[in-house]
Image 1 (cartoon, rainbow, N blue to C red):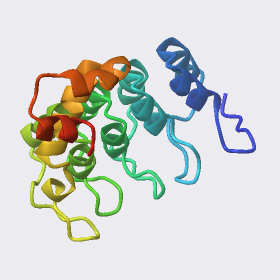
Image 2: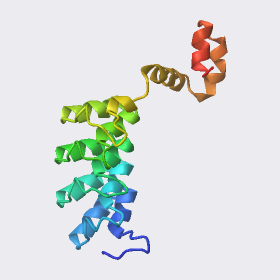
Image 3: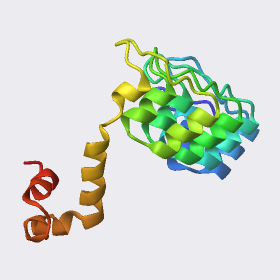
Image 4: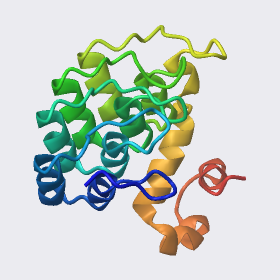
Length: 184
């Protein structure tokens, strides 16, 4: 159950990658290692990045280190924030994940702010994320967030849908707003 491919992938990693919590549980019952050395792919990080919260729950119940820090990925919480997997973020935080540990000096809050995910930002703040933490470029999370004007444009364009963006010039709006919506 602990055989690895040439890339270091284990059956448990594959189960977590596919979102099969039942398979992950079975593998763990038969002796699969939940965590390996830092150079091998991590089932925990894979489940967190793909949004497989059930697999994450199984791994947590088997006592994995929720703060396992892989040099090339960071912590599972950071990976979940980069992938915007809110259910996995919740599971990790409730399991005691350190809200300040991310990837190098990037915190999970930096990742959430970079993706302008207000729901994730609010959740991280509820768990005590430091709004003044600086990354290696001395930037705070707020420095990485998109300006609200860009978010407004994105929201309007998303609401309209890709198929109707060609209709923007026909809207009864001031020219400056039409140009703004069309990136002119």
